[in-house]
Image (cartoon, rainbow, N blue to C red; front, top):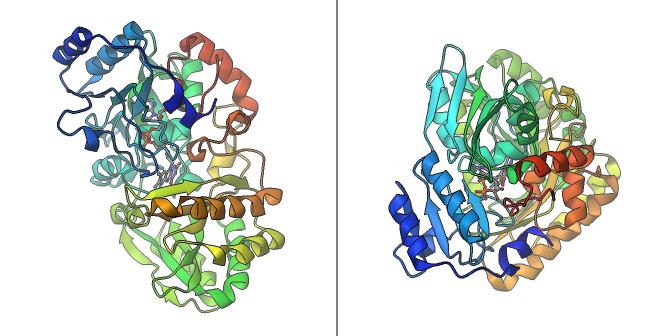
Length: 462
Ligand SMILES: Cc1cc2nc3c(=O)[nH]c(=O)nc-3n(C[C@H](O)[C@H](O)[C@H](O)COP(=O)(O)OP(=O)(O)OC[C@H]3O[C@@H](n4cnc5c(N)ncnc54)[C@H](O)[C@@H]3O)c2cc1C
């Protein structure tokens, strides 16, 4: 059974009214049920394709609420989803007829600027972490859309601009606090529950509800060199070759993502967004080839605030729109792969959609593959078509385009897939996501969640 089916197919037990009201009374946070005020807003997630009606949504105010909700779910046998930022592409954090344990109100971040760590509660968004850390001129790797859930992102790995210099988000995890399926509260670090600490760095939401993570921070900003250049479509082959060569030779401090896009005037184009985690002068020098090889039609690279940069992509992913993507990792972008994408891209049905390369490598690739549960260390790019549209009647056309783009690139791609970008794609893809670490994750799952209580995720079966 796959993620989305798990969310909708399981028959749910009748939950006794008295038990629900008793739970409500015990919570410091709130409980929302169908028919109650705010229910429709409470069941909305980022992807407008996901339309499910949970029986109960618990907004936890603190860790005690999380343990109350878990013990209620164990007692009643109700299917349980865990939600932080609500960004999962397949809507794994929302279930039909079940319980949603929502941590979005637990979003406090505290920073220790002396030892350079930040402790973020389980429902913090990327923006919450960036806001709190940038006050001290500090940062750690996170993703490119500031209202993504930080813990959801971290548990699957965490790919972002600082990754090539400082590793994945999960590589910067120092301590995780977790409520397990039996209601225990555990710490996981290099010193405590070391096996669990290994599994939480890439094994997704399989082992429990993470109520807080402490991260290692690094000096950065507040001003950094970043921005994008855009090339016109008639130069797309040259521009994509330039990107492939330029990014392959990049120093760790440089991260470049790129996208085939449709511009506001309706023409297609190719955009490279660059970020340099170092001095301005050095960055200007490193980025010169992007401007000099041939002239871009737009050049918006310059000094900007890191916190602002981290929000710059938000407009490209409007909450509530319909989204579909299929991701795969690449070791390089060869000519045949580039040609296949360039030939197919113009059939894109929606001008909001794009095809993106997200650069990884650098420090991410130097962490030994068995050191954490995150398996795909050898990749140079994550790559995927991002289909975005609003009309449900256009679902098939948009999803078909994305699938064709994915298929066109398949012969050139690696076997693995980024667990956080995996949709409802079946067991083989789940195994591909965890790769050679899968068996060890199964052993861990048997220890910490033998009944598979936490199963609405890219599931490791005990
Ligand atoms: C617009 C957009 C941009 C993105 N950009 C990036 C990016 O740049 N880099 C990157 O690495 N990823 C990126 N992602 C993918 C993102 O990391 C995943 O979707 C991630 O799961 C989002 O976490 P969430 O808390 O927002 O999601 P939710 O839907 O709330 O949760 C998803 C799953 O995460 C688990 N989970 C969430 N919170 C907890 C918790 N506190 N304890 C235990 N399990 C939990 C659960 O299994 C849950 O089903 C992006 C996603 C979107 C939609």
